[in-house]
Length: 485
Image 1 (cartoon, helix red, strand yellow):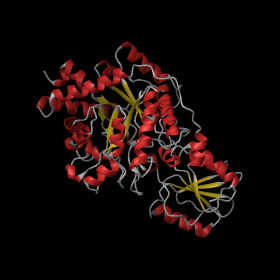
Image 2 (cartoon, rainbow, N blue to C red):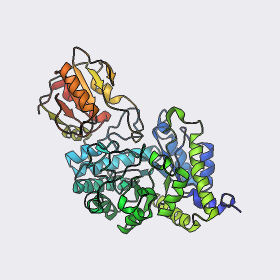
Image 3 (tube, rainbow, N blue to C red):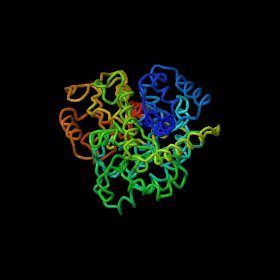
Image 4 (cartoon, rainbow, N blue to C red):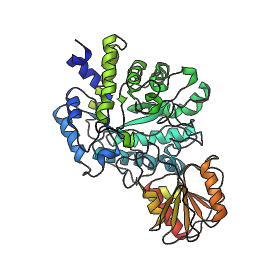
């Protein structure tokens, strides 16, 4: 009998798999896999748009009540990254805003709200907080998703947020071990490699993970990044890296970052990567967001991605590459976490003034003139990363206040109030160059920077530290009246 034909083995394998899916209700294929032991699923923006907030929640809750507890995950970070509010933009502060304001009570309250919003759509695992220490200003994928560049600040805010998440009844999953903050490549598209030594890794990037583990975090997500002194495999697939994580005292669930990301898919492949991740010590395999291929995605992309990983694990069990005991241990950790989330959460919530946090997170370089009424907005930012999972234009619309929105290399308007949006000016590059060109044409323009600040630009600049609806609305209010440096 092959592994695929053995009901017990199928149940164990299902217990370590965590796929995304297409559609706004549980599809038939996913329901069949849930009946065969699947751990649960991960929700993305496309699963939630256009449906009542509780529709999927009711489906997953009914299944859990009738059959067994499931783990349903969601990337809900506040700020730039939201699945629940992807169409309209998050109304919660993001990590960089919270780290800059440095109010631990606010950060903990945001954690509670993240859990509440996630649970309302059926998710009980919040894939956050981000525990990365963002030390590279060129970082294309972390940036304002991090609380900051100081390990002690990141540690205390990661702990505050995870406590809020877990008190509100969801599991928190800190990410991305051993730290994605000192990279200048996005692992969705390439394989980043840390160029720092282990001493710097231990001193700068691991403290937030240590603090989170000490605070009782339920799960840790791995990063697809290479630490040369640990070998040539990225941390997700690296037994040295994951043994190091266990050596920090972590006994919870190790979750992989998505296996369809290019760092894995284009190196070893999602299927072989899944086998390597289990052998390395991972417990729960996040398979994919099936909409990531964009227009190239097949109508059954979710099933294809899932089967690729599932069949690779079955084959590895059949040929002895993977020991069933490894899968059984991982599945048991996942099961224990799912069962633990059945407890009722606390109903008490901390006070949270989101607009205060967003306002206090804004800084300005030079005097910002008052720009009341409609404004032309020229957005020179690049496309959102796959982590954001949204191309909605809520930031541009809020800043335009009814005015027109231009993008990329569009001609610079010759007159009228002009706002230029940037998000990658923390280091020299195309956006800084573009701002310099615009300044030569329109020295009266104002810049709104939604990324991490760098050296002053040649135009007055308002730094929001987030590309969210909340941040944009507060910035628009400041543009109405002007602001001093």
